[in-house]
Image (cartoon, rainbow, N blue to C red; front, side, top):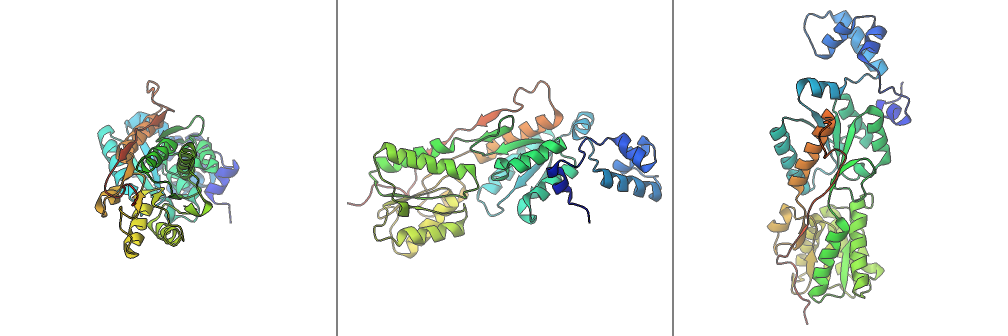
Length: 352
């Protein structure tokens, strides 16, 4: 059995530069016949169609997305998402679809959770003929994924990466600054015992948010005991585990800053279950300002990032790269979105 297509691309052994003429020569037919098979024209014999499709598969041919976008004016952009339960997903997709409709771009959506290896989802989009792919974390931080796209001649656009790769277009926020902003808010309220729930360690955003928290605590001369920093995974379930750990400490923190809203909502749920009043006995803060932040009670103090607008920008940049717009000065840019501290009812000065 041959190697999977994604493994061949990663090893560099697959030929991403195969042309339509190469397919025609391999199949023993004319280039016109190959073109008609690719575009699903009628009046092609089944024998000829079978030969062409076999040659396309064996040679690893991928129709030129740039040429197609130039010819039709419609760019094909792939969009990956890794966490279908994330509160960010609906805002992300809303912004992506809105912009695609405005600029006449075709989106191909692929969940990475449906594949045993994330690279398979990427290859599926490559083989569908996209010219660019919007990559969420942690895929946008994975050099193997970037290598895979480069081998196929597909442009990446990193979404919400905290450490954009050189030469790769990105749309992001300053996670360090956002975490510092929230930590200062808690310190200014009078909190000194502040705990932190980490995000997924494979995400650069999680690392930068923790760094922003620790740096701001250090600047204020406040210690961060090891027991006050616990693991999370950006999921509600991981937030429940982290909250039970922190709220079970003999010296309980007066405030908990979770790396995203889903985990902060979980902390709030555990606190309510234990009879701990929020915010009079415990302040809780999140990050992202997803819909859950304003639907739980008390409403969550958090850092707002404009996910829908950022997704729209990412799709617009990806479409420009897919078309290789020569006059598009946004190509290969690092776009940094503004952050806002949203003070709601979940934070207050500590009791006493």
